[in-house]
Length: 467
Ligand code: ZN
Ligand code: ZN
Image (cartoon, rainbow, N blue to C red; front, top):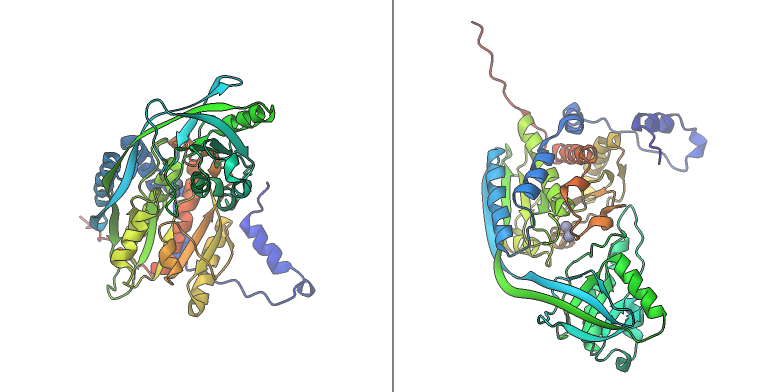
């Protein structure tokens, strides 16, 4: 797609004939030159986000919630945030259920013996080393599984297929996430011995997409795995041949309780009586890739933006950076933060958790009395090619429950077109991050923080002594 430079867009809007307008367009707001300078400097020069993303994925690697790897990530984060000059750097710990993945395999025994690539979903039941063996019964959606008579499912291995197509806003995830989120419970309730789903992904690599799931309404846990997309398509073709299909599925794991925690750091504002602006990401990742797009880059983006404000001077409001723990296994870090701090005032919440591709839209929910501020935010972001969307919604993973409870929020929407090619797979690694788009993210977050936490008192430059 060709992108029209924002200056050209602005001129086109300014010269549009009046009769073409159905209602008056508000005059463009002037952007504070300090905000514009911080934004443009981040766009051209930021290296902090890359340094954090590269460091975390290289020096820690996978960061499964509740494991010693996530604990190493917390220690790494504390050292990093302190070295960047943040204050009040601390860990708030909590306990979570977790699992360490063991040997996993899926094999068609009949009619066409062959191996397939599978990974257990988070929350899956566990098999012994011999696995479970049974006839496969296929469904094209969770709804057809839901409508199926119990006797067609009992004692069998359920397979749920679906087609997920990429979208810029990632909206397919809500709809096509159903096989993962609800499929295992329904299959278990109908007496299935296991379930495999087509990965919730838009790629054609042999890398299954894991993700969280829990057995609801007292359903007994059964082994639940995701086949890679090519393997799911292969299984679909095998089933279409009409002969009984037998699969052996092995999903071994060790389940346990473990420590998790949120890493919190602050850039203190000049007026401590004012409510802080919270920017977040999640520090944990799945155990397959190194969690570069999900969500090391988010941590890099939000901390880089706060660091750039720090370099420029002192904001009026405190900026609180929260690298949440245990997001992947059920937003547990966000819920712990809400339990401990949900009653304290927050001026705004925002979270980066959708990769590192460019931001195309800003949504906010700051309240009707802060409409001018929301418009100001839009004006500051427009030169980055960012549209102003809704002024009545904001979203975020860990911060979602607090926004739902009425805390003001901002959502900077990233381009999700290729996000679900990589999401929750072994392919989520640093090489997938485009440094140019990463800097556009930092520029947007820096501008947002400058608008919400400002005005910024410039750093007092030491006068050079003339000798
Ligand atoms: Zn995430
Ligand atoms: Zn995730």
